[in-house]
Image (tube, rainbow, N blue to C red):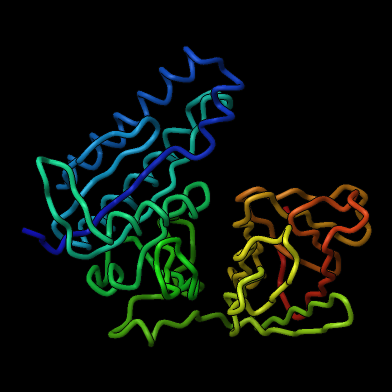
Length: 309
């Protein structure tokens, strides 16, 4: 019999590079310890560990609020733990959360929510929690957690794009710069007293977005606000958020994004990572600037307040 449940996929981000750095034996020991810690943390917060998958854990909760509380606590604790570890051993955790009917068969679980949670975990960046709209609605207000609308995204295996949210766990984030839980998800809206605008141009096409338009998606998908028809560009290649009065670019692609700010000779390479966009510059999608035919888009940011330390 299927039961309404909330599924959590959590895995270690960048574990492949860990094996390259530490070697198989040391990396296996480190990954195993963190994976077991993830499982223990989930169990202590009322979740059921279905199975461990190498560098990841599949879990099920009876309620969405418990899943949100457990995962935000887990990432917060992992952040604190990493501060005491040597740099080569530091590992971020990424999480996908989805709610729906789940079928339990001999201790394993099956259902659409299981598949979606796995896909969200794959798409989430290091130290990020991605959740479906259903999960956010069911979870409601959670202590020390905020929700940020990511927008509609294609998920492999789903016929229609899903509305997704990022669950923010960082305690030093100002709540008024994040989307807060409201009566309905449609009422979620970022609150920020500083307004910004960002302009893009490529191949004679110019587009401008305000901070209220965020998130803005870049990619080959037809519903991306910045649709770039080039085979080297992923369907959903990057996301631009309005965060703490700045535009934040997050790479979500298969091959990466390069950002070159005017006045700097060294491009910033993003691989499932993020950087603040400021001033003017260019971004290369899928291949670096050194590739003569690289799809390059120019940008200009105005009206933002950027803190560079």
